[in-house]
Every structure is written in structure tokens, then in C-alpha cells.
Length: 441
Image (tube, rainbow, N blue to C red):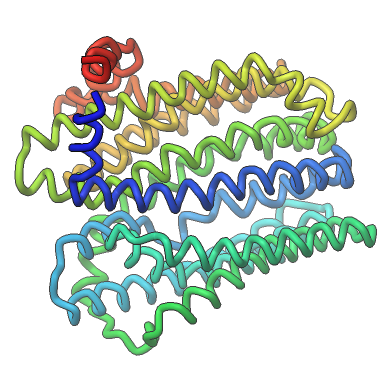
């Protein structure tokens, strides 16, 4: 068993992937620990109502977040992974940066214009305005895409971790000085801005001077529009429940709901970290050996699903203890919400991988169709179930829409049906005895 493990570890590409994932996991785990501690302190300090206001504003801005990238990030990483010419790489980065920069400004204008039109609460409108300004700075995450393509996220992790530490310390300070909820919105925006400044500093090159290719813009937008629309749909069905819950059932209940699902959403980083590290490797496997490529996809599906099962079981058992320890007694029913909501992690994981594979294989139209289906179901269920069943309706809606969009929809189309059977094998733990035997013998 140890010899087999050593062979795997000594593979250069696999070792690089594990090191890259290790840095990403280190960043996320520290953020998880500090975020839970300071986040719980923030939730206790603000109380369910003010915490609900802050989360309403965050959810509103998140719905328009897809406009920042126009869905090109996966395509940029794919092209950078394949391209060897330095000049061509600079052209890709320069083009991507301009697209993201324009997208950031567009998203800000839409956020501000929409919130002041539909919302009478001036405080909510002000919170949305402040948080949305961070979208402009997210254009500099183009630099991070370069390091992702190199499977070298250590540099960007350090930069963004420093920004996170600074704003976390500032959160503690404003809590100690009894600051209002508006300052938490300012720090949300500030963290993104500091991360952008750090990326500019460490990159050591002026991305503003990079060539912009009109031809490449057309190629990106032609191939990314299904991804872009699917991202909007994803943001809608992940955040619409919070907006409707706050609108129909009140901001205080939204605060309790947001506190519970925050724990689930923190766990979403696991599949995203694994898949972002494996994407360049899967691209190379597809180009060199289709058999190995198929095997690796099944193995990643299995790893994501088995890990998700383990996390869901543990958190479901410990949910009452976790909620009471973090938030105290003010957040009623948060433990019940968490017990149900955490199981979305399973379908989030296989969905993230499925979408990334479709990008790698240039099958983005299927990505759009499956996501639209899930969004339509989520919208119908949100407006039907939440007014009737409160937070139970919200949780049920998100689980059903995730299952339909990320799993059931893959059987509809002939070209994606093979992924349905791969996902089914993972969900039913079909390959688990095989992995156990390989480790033992």
C-alpha cells in the first residue's frame, strides 16, 4: 500500500497538483476557522435583524456577480494551459482583463440602479452600493487566472490571505467600537480592493499595457455566453431564496437562515479548490489519452462525493452543538436549517466538476440548458414553498433545484448521458470497495 502511495506522490504533475491544492486548502481552512470565529462574533453582535440586512445586500450583489467575468474564466485558464508563447499569453491576459474591467463597472451600475428602483429601505440600498463597488476590483483577478493555469496558486493565496487578515482584524476593531452595520459592508469591499492591489504588486508586470485582441474578444464572448447565462442562473437559484425569504418572512428570519447556510456554503470551497487544481491536468489528459481522461473524471467524481457524504454526516450530527456554540440562542431553528441544507454539498460538488468538464470539452450549450432548467425549478419552488413553509420551503427548493440541475438533467442529452452514469456510480458508492482493496493490498 505504501509503495503505491509513494508512486502516486512521486508523479511530478500529481505532486504539483497536490501542492497547489495544499496551498488553496491552507488558505481556505484558515479562512474557515477565522471566518467562523469572527463571523459568529459578527452575527452575535449584529443580531438576526442587522445580520439579515447585511446578507440581503450580499445576496443581491451576488446575483449580478456573473457580469464581472462574462463567463470567460474557465476559457482563459484552458487557453493559458495550452499556450506556450509568452506574447500570446499576454494577449490572452490583456484581453481577459479588459473584459472583466468593463464587466465590473457594468455590474456596479446595474446593482445600484436596480436596488434603488425596487427597495424602499435606504439602508439596504446603501449597503448594496458599497458592497457592489468591490466588483470593479475583481477585474484584477485576471492575474490569479494566470497562476491557476500554472498550477501555482501559492502566490495568489498569500496575497489574498493578507487582505483577509487585515479586514478580519478591522472587523474585530469595529465590533469593539460598536460600529454600525454599514462598516461591515465597507470591509467586504475593502478586502477585494486590497487583494487587487496585492495581485498588481506581486505580478511585477503592467497588465494595463498588454495587447487587447478584438478577435480574441469575439472568440471568448462567442464561447462564453452559455457559461455567462448559466452563471447568472446559478447565482439566481443560489441567492433568490434569501431575497424572497427576507421579502415575505422578514429580515430577522433571513438572518437566522443566512447564519445556518453560511456553514454549508463555507464547505463549498472543497470541490472548488480540488477542481480548480485539477483543471489544467484534465485538459492535458484529454489531449493525450482519452482513456486516462475518462478514468480521472470518474475518480474526481468519486473523491468529491465520498468526501461530501462524510462532511454531511458529521455536520448533521453536530448541528445543534455547532449553532449554539457559534451563534447562541438568538438564531432560532438555525440548527434544523443546517441539518437539511448541508446535503446540498453533494450535488454542488458533482455539479462544479460537470460544468468544468463541459467547458473543457466545448459543450457549453448543455451547461446553459441544464442550469436554466434548475433555475426555472428554483424560481417556481421559491415563490411557491417559501410563503407557505418559510425556511423549510427555502431549503427544500435549493436541494431540489441542485439535484435537477447538477444530476438529473445530465441524462436528458445524449452527449452528457455518460456523466449521469459516472455521477450515479459515485452517489451509490459503487467504486468504494475497489479503492479500499487497492489501499489494503
